[in-house]
Length: 409
Image (tube, rainbow, N blue to C red; front, side, top):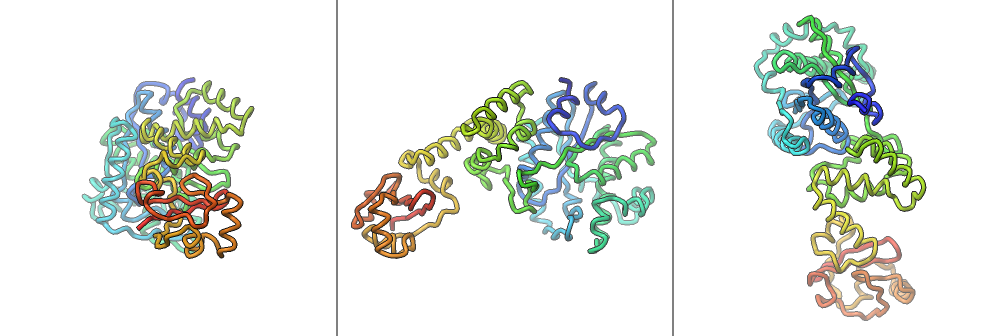
């Protein structure tokens, strides 16, 4: 497949501007850009699909510009329901530097990274209205979905004007860097077309654009921090193990879609994996492949193998092979108890692991209590550092899924 055909096969093209875009993408190298605002100190999985599309274009020989919105981030693009909270300038600056570093690593240092505040800060308000505002009709802006959906509840002038700034970004890159293509998520189509119109009206030339469908989970929700389900690309915010667990538990019906969007596996490799996955879905071949490809691309082979090691140890109950750090990663969110008790039954009852001594004895007698992966039945078992991992930690499981971390004083 040629580049454009493969992008379509992977489901990465929704809206298109430019009648000969296919020819441009399949032809000589061109310069294109993708942009994001630094609203957090890390991008998330929702951004990753766009970054991978940029990476695909770069691998095909095209020159990527990654724009981090130091200016647009000060305003915030219109949300469907309410205005974004204004970010403190120092926080935004830190976010910007973190994202620049992250993008550079993902694009393997091949992307040119720019900040739109570098040119927007030179404008006075009246100058910007003369340069950009006089070319864009208000009725045209009101018709844009990103603006019209907020008219009933109200939209501030700052949000209303956001599309002018993003449109000018495209014009600026077109004129200064011969950037002829913008590629974004489909929710940015209204802003993209503003840029296309500015370029046409001011330079008399045509530019190109395409959007990628927003990546959704099996319930139709976006991957994003505003959706409350952000999976951060920074491994210090979302560990490789957490990412592995999410991906390996992907709904079966999303596996083929995600393999196409999130991996560089060839179409033949993907369809072969899908065939095996459909034949034996319980083996989760597709999900495990997805996890391996994404984590390796983001954080490297060693991080993937580390995540796999933690996962396999927890699944098998072989907790003793995990170090303190691995346990804290694997059991993130599990209640932590600082033990003061000397015997097991007191520990179970006093800390609410069991509701009563009677219930504790029933769980112990049935073998439903494990400590560090071993079943225990003795209610008078001493609680001390001799039975602890790393001389301080117990992992207690009650039943099949209820876990507690106990720190020995």
